[in-house]
Length: 305
Image (cartoon, rainbow, N blue to C red; front, side, top):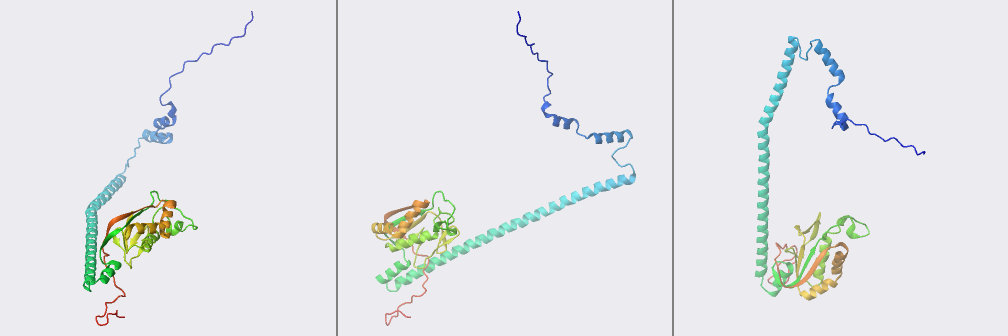
């Protein structure tokens, strides 16, 4: 009976255990032969001839000693100089820090003096305004000029930048030009429109972050900061306006400037809330500079030219 030929069983020959570092042959070779064969052969020849690496002659030994002494002297002198100059550098640095602190303190003191003088000038102006007759006309002039503190019903408008300001621009949109590099931030032009809209809607007195506005107030920009009379403001911007609260709020919302602010909310994420208040208190302006007005003549009662 013929059958199919059977394949001989495959036997695996026993394998010798491999070295743990067999996979790192290059590193092993470097460790085992750290010295190049040529250098090793040269060293062996010198050793067989009894040669050593040190100089044999007296002159060579003296030269080597002199070189070592010179190197040690250079290192010692360098260390000594560094040790000597270190206190000098530290002293100069401390003197500079003290000078900066002193100048900063002087600048703060001068700024405080300027604020006190500005307040004194403002109080004297308000006192002179009251002593000029104390009539309703004088009170109205003080109110309109911002020389006196006022209070009454009105609206509170809080405007803030978008939560996530986005950069970018397109010349077709004025907010996306170089003047408005960040479309999510409120700009001085936006604040100007808000303030002008409140004035046009019937506001009798306005302040921004506690800064009273007058007929001479200017809202400008310095970089990304909004300035009111050269004083920087920090968002959120709280605008307080004294007037007929309900009427002022309604007229502002329906005005072109109110619709402009609403468009900023819808398109750029500017945040704005407006609410009526029963009693709003506004401080007087720091100082009111009279440029053209002159006191009345006592004889004629007419203003002098």
